[in-house]
Every structure is written in C-alpha cells, then in structure tokens.
Length: 234
Image 1 (cartoon, rainbow, N blue to C red):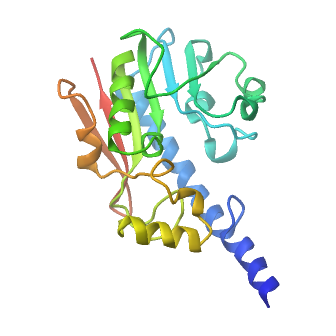
Image 2 (cartoon, rainbow, N blue to C red):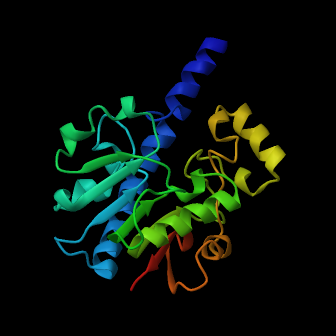
C-alpha cells in the first residue's frame, strides 16, 4: 500500500512531471508570454539597448516552461547580459542555447556595474527568493541603480495558490505553520525565507527608492491578480 501511495504521489505531485505541474505548465507559458508582450509594449526595447537579465535559470532544456523567456524570445542576444548567483557548473550548457548572450555570475544585491550602465534591467520572479525584506530592498535598489528602465515581476502573495509549491492558502498562514505544511507535503526547500518570501503589492512597491516613479501592473487569472509587474521608465 505504501508503495502504491508513493507511486500516486509521484504521478500527481512530483515536480516537474506530476499531473498538477503539467496542468500548471500551460498557465505558466501563457503568463510568461503576457509578461513578455507587456515588456515589449511598455519598455519598447531597441536592438541596440544594453539589457541586464537578473536571475536566469540553469535548466538543461530551455524550452521548459519558456524558462529564460527574455533570451528565448527577444532576438537581439548580442546586447543581453544574463546574471545568476547559482553554481557555474549548472550553466555549462547555457551557451549551447544562447551563444551570443553574455553570462556573468554575481549577487543581484551587490552588482558590479556602474550606475545607469544598462538601458534596461529585467528580472522575472527573483525578488521573492533573495531573503528577508532588507535583502529584497537591496536587490531592488541595485537593479534601479544600474538600469535606466526597469522591468521586475513577482508572484502576488494574495493569489490563493503559491506558484512555487502549488499548495493553496498555506502561504497566507503564520510562517511556522506554513513551513510545517511545506515540509509535510514534500516542499521543504521552500520552508525558508532565503528561498521564498512572497510579496503583496504594497510590500513590493515599498522596496523601490522613493524617488522612482513606479507603474504597477497586475496579471490576473479568473479575475484574481496572480503576478505583479513593476515598471520604472526614464
């Protein structure tokens, strides 16, 4: 019986091939396409713009859920710098997929670039993974410092289902209870603020420097905002 339960759990729940993740994949693809279209329509990147993408992912298959969708869909790779603080060994295949993109390793909270060095700074769903509020603020400040135009996204904490765990409502509970649930349901990686610290719209906007004019866009599913997109223009 235990083996059968484990089998069902893998088929239904295991990432990334479980049934619930396959269902979510279609929504994720649609969401990322909408975010990219918003990026193009509002930021209006030009071919010669220098772009920094903060927080690229290391997956071997870059078609998976349109991971690194800026690199996948934006045609002018020669002007993109992709930054990660992950293990370089995990990125050994990156240039097989994006040979013209410059890959650099560093900390988004302490960027080694001059102020206003990039025309555009892009970051998709990274700020919720950098730690407590003070670390998130450092991250946002650094992105605003090195870029002239900013495009930053994060999931909305008030959406009923957390996209990282697909566990409904648990992320609304007190931290101790939430982390207990994550561990019990096999999502123990996310049971730490350094790995997942979701933001409300108010929290998100409060992280930006006061002198910046921030436009907040909300992407919805069934009329409920699921993603927050903050845009800073010149």
